[in-house]
Image 1 (cartoon, rainbow, N blue to C red):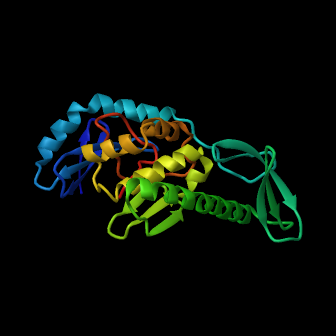
Image 2: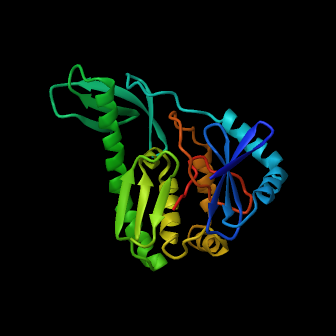
Image 3: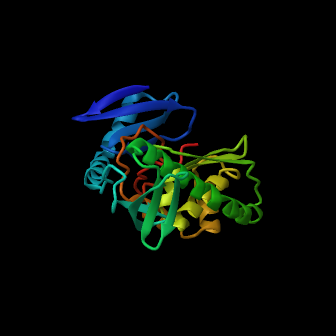
Length: 256
């Protein structure tokens, strides 16, 4: 890892066994990172990054102006999203096992009297995981024969920097529980993206061609994810998928 400055902008450099240089701008404040070939001179990287300074500043301004979620306090009439739709939280205190259910425009959170915020958060988080786990098998079953691949395992977990990831060697994929809050079309896009890595590991021209063939509107779904509010928590660094200079990803999918 190396670092240099372009005026008041710090640039992190990571050297990898790759052929091309990749520039990315990361949320929530627009941190800049360059992935470069192992033997590339730092001055060459600096000149390249300087040539993209206007683009970097543009992306940073977009992050600064991006809508952000407010901290969730798990109070009555607080907004929560499920599959892209807004629901108002309604607390139901009862001496029964905790549960979550959707009823009309409300997300009912059944809790024991006196339950604290951490308990409420854990119950809702587990419910989101269950929603995602229930939705994914049908998508895998749909796309395996169409793509000619086999997914051995699917992991669902909270991820700060990625919508999903793939381990081609293990034939497994990981999905962010936050996807249960987004439209179902976005989940399908992420699933297809990760499954495509079982055919092509890199984000190269062949990979883009595969995405165009399997799910031609994938750029639209990516845009839907980009336009949704940023999560409240701070994010760690992740990798950015290069897409021929088309812009940025907010959760910086898909670091494989």
